[in-house]
Image (cartoon, rainbow, N blue to C red):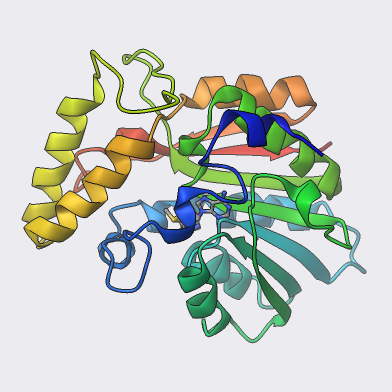
Length: 274
Ligand SMILES: C[S@@+](CC[C@H](N)C(=O)[O-])C[C@H]1O[C@@H](n2cnc3c(N)ncnc32)[C@H](O)[C@@H]1O
């Protein structure tokens, strides 16, 4: 079947360039980002725990096992793992999906908490769930630092599939890079880089920040190169509008971290299938 995503993009398709993006591979710049909390993983953990706690209290007392789907899980799915670990009186069945074979191989060896009673990590495109038939509906969908690559149409396409994959009452947590409203939306070009790009200033500031945190010039440039080529974030309000149109009830959560000069670019948008 031909899909919008196949037609539109080489980023969210089966043959995505993300399959081999060096920043995510072993020795790439991304592990440093996680280790130093430069992707605001700690803030995402705290926010997710708050949301999931409310969600669990809405469940029937007899429901003690939850199905979790982690899209674009990466090699170290630390956010959702910490969340599952926090709720030690529940069990979790975890499915992670990532397109990059290196990430999948490492994630399969990741030390998940003991209450994860079943785990599967699939090497696949996470942006079209129709391409691989997930057997069961899920209670929680998490996606971390990935939707900022998509156009609004691609995000809507994915979010519709997430909505169908969720059980009624289920929750979709999206921790991501969101564009502050003061910048205009910049659409990912089909080829090359856009002209009049407000991101130049942001990316050069980000690179300096990475270096003050101790990242080498080479790895900092590798990360910035990835961002320059693939990061075209929508805003939290634009994400809210997309999810509301699909039928989600939505809450948005900004983060503040005085040690991170770009913490206003990060946040969590949560969709509730009520
Ligand atoms: C920035 S990392 C985020 C990893 C993890 N979710 C986190 O929050 O730290 C993005 C991940 O998305 C994966 N990815 C990118 N495009 C994808 C796609 N179309 N399908 C599945 N995974 C994808 C990459 O391989 C990479 O592991």
